[in-house]
Length: 440
Image (tube, rainbow, N blue to C red; front, side, top):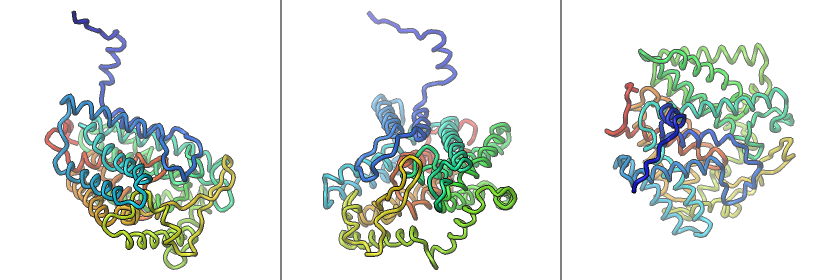
């Protein structure tokens, strides 16, 4: 005898208001990045965060829906590109100098560049899903931005030029770039959502809220003192504005410059640190500081490792094992990190701080070809098809690809990269099944 289970009336009302959507798990993945995880041993091979668990839950739910026939299959082009990344990582692991250690790196690479992006691609079906996930980026950025701004104003952040003024949000001094990454993502998502609402019939209140959010997030991004995040955000915002409206891009530059003059020159917010950090950008080639010099040496180290393992690389996570045997003698032992929680520590330099060099050294030419094919397909597809909320996906992808020139995966916010790639894949490979009810 079959038993029919009926939901109570309040549950029915909740289900009607908030229908079950896999995209909720994608949004939860973004928001759970903000959960403090405490200071971690950066040399440990595995770090599992609440955001990672949420991303794996999303992958599991999507896999279950695929088995039940509730979702369409992936676009063949997307399958080929993602499969190429898996194949390259597998070959690198098999030919690794230490296959046991590389196996954990293989799992991480497949999670970040294949499984979670594919799950986000299938979970985001229409404009409501896109707004939900992009809105989670904005909310996470507002949370971290508020914490970071308070750290700067109350002098409770990480050490910068000997003063505890660097905004780091909830991440701690050992993950000093995390807050600026989250804030950058949120600022670009807010800009993209605001521009998407400029069309006829767009929501005026949402547009104003997103413009206000983007304006607020500019301050915590500034006091993160992250040159890399500043440059990547400027590049991505420029691409976004030019793709949306070239005239708006010009106005945006003028308004941004005026706001910077008022905030930094007039009100003095972050003036000394920001101006000093900005001036240092122009000296990265002529007179680089120690952090830039170390980065150049790490790139050279990655090149030397690749020369010894040209086709399949040395294997995932092999860079840190081979660094000392291939690095110049002048390379520092680590970078300085300090805040009220950890005191002063030296953080070891375990990667080349360039995703493309990291892939080259650990996965060889096969890996570089696979990753570049994926990135170029996503970029060209987004440039051709980005409209509405897809503009934000284009901007986020541009930020990631530019940031990869001087950074790589690692840290609490790594899982956000996979969500960005999934959103970009949805824009680049919309497929006949995607439901863009409002034309976005």
